[in-house]
Amino acid sequence: MKLLRPVLWALTTAFVANAHSLPSPQHTCVIPALKDGRDDAPAIREAFSKCGNNGKVVFQKDTTYSVQTALQLHNLKNVQVDLFGTLEYSTDVRYWILHGSYYYFQNISIAMEFSGEDITIDGHGSGTIDGQGQVWYDLALGVGGLYGRPIPFCLRNVKNAVAKNFQIVQSGKWNFVMLESQNVLVDNITLSSTSDDFQVQCNLGNTDGFDTINSNNITIQNSWANVGDDCVSFKPGSTNIHYEGVRDVVENITAEDVSLYGSRNGAYIKTYVGKRTYWPPQGGGGGNGYVRNVVFKNFHIENITASPVLIQQCTHWAGYNVPACADTPPTGFFSNISWSNFTGYMNEKVGTKAISWTCSPLATCEGFSFKDINVKSSTGANGTYSCTNVVGYNSACQKTN
Image 1 (tube, helix red, strand yellow):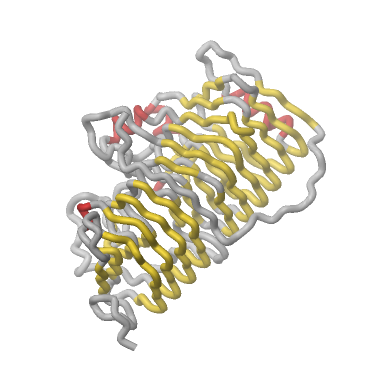
Image 2: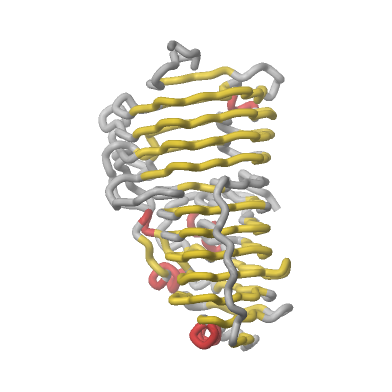
């Protein structure tokens, strides 16, 4: 098997989900599996309907549940989910494109989502969610924004939740998403999205590990990802913010004690071009809002294929007829961002550029700092630095004031 852009990592954010005493479950629902190729989703919905409030829902060990229709498990309260078995999604591409649960950001589609409060989902080391993503990798052929690719696991509008001790394999798109949620602890989760296709390079685009959107107070710890895109992506409205729906906001983020092996990007921040071209997931744009109060520290990097410390503001996925960034520069605001204690080495494709900060002429990039960036080139040469439109730094990232 060829692993495309594999990433092995561990990340802990600075925020911890609230812990408080909850009443013991009053009801237990053990979900049966049909085991004859029919859809087990109706039985799953029934179990959560009966035991989703002050109850326990059990997926049996050594049991595979066929999930052929979308699961919207809403209005949960004080529920313990014991995921001993395996959830296996169908490969019915047409169904998932038409019937996945929709969310407006990048027009994403979700196969299974939980919402409510005081939710614990525990895989006990054996629980597995199998997205059967190979069909999507082959269909997409590297087009990361292909519409309708299903996300296998989502916490949506959740308050006070724990997800731990299970794995997600072969995700059709992003693996594990938190939307409009707060006080979430993610612990000991393993994510693996790899392709069996030796012919098509980079057909794993957009198989992010963890994504947060419009969410606050999130902790991710003791977790590993071998995926084809971002290990963890803090998307708009992530962590300790008030989201107003017009501006994209990411603030108060700490990423520390991170290891990256064979990754494309390291500590990477991007915004889209200033003018929208077409519509997400393949188009998009706007590039306003702000990113502030972000700490990246204690990163170890091996064989990375882009600059370890990277900012760019001209991202787009439309593919053609896209205005040049110089014609429609973004106006985002970046402030109070630090990078410290980076070690390791880069792939030969990168050359020696360890830091690349490229800010738009209409944006504001200020309050940046870096210390102990000791990432070498593939030949052992010291890293070089490049800065564009960064307040307080010249083009070689030397301080000017």
